[in-house]
Length: 401
Ligand code: NIG
Image (tube, rainbow, N blue to C red):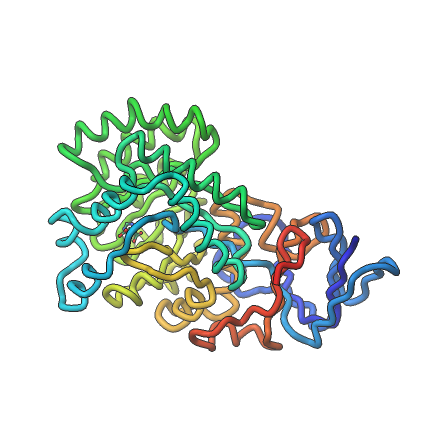
């Protein structure tokens, strides 16, 4: 059966399936009052006059905003345990990298993940995905990275696949096989490249491969070694310049990474280089909100024509949130984005980071992942703090809530 959402303020974002760069981020392709027809999980028509079959189910939007579902393109939403004690330490001033160096941080979650079964990991991820969906996220990337050995990285990736199968939205898994290390870095990297990467590739042939380039985590040389091998078969992504600018950005551009994520400590030169390259920049402003109030100089990146995406970075250490509306509200307050730019970064540009061209816009043939807000003005998404702006979620053409 078909579904018609009528009398809506529609943010189509429809100017072709490609990442928006620079000034384009501000163009939401608005139809002030129109309708969207959905059938068989896809958008059939969108415009100010849309014909619908007589038996179509009708939703009257009453002038409220209808837009693409959020695409959260950077999360570590599969984890076990909690980091509440560590958070109290941070509140008392102990830095993140010092906790990591002493075997806490990522390593604390690694311990909890190793102790959890695949079924337990899948169940807790499934719960988080449920909350995300109610707040409008219809596509989410979920990274491994808390296994740190082949057995446990594979357990995480299988748990992500299992949770994804039970969720109406789309989960894009990423193999974060360079998140931290045990023992000597050089030997560890050798093991990842020789053993872990082939194991991952065998079972997850198209998966993106990611690493964390940072002091106390992976060096630039280690990341490059992994990526030179991985990029032959996988898209590559990298966490870079979160606390220290180590020189990963030029390497990521050279290696044609799909994205460089974080960028809080990037130099002006590197931000401009990235902005002028095909690689997307992903900002994670809830991380600064939760940890140390440092944010990416996103205005510069946009002014230089960069393709910017925005994500939650949902994880137990630096960003304990699943909320794209909060990411939008934070990006507008602390990264200098306009509400329209933040909406573009949270939808079509997030999809581009994941290599998905069938979503993030409202146009015929696109997957019918739509959200109807409670509000008539999309700027309320950025203005409101802490509420759920989403009234109705339509995911793959199905009305969810
Ligand atoms: O992107 N910094 C590296 N990875 C995550 C944090 C993971 C954790 O602390 O558990 C991030 O912030």
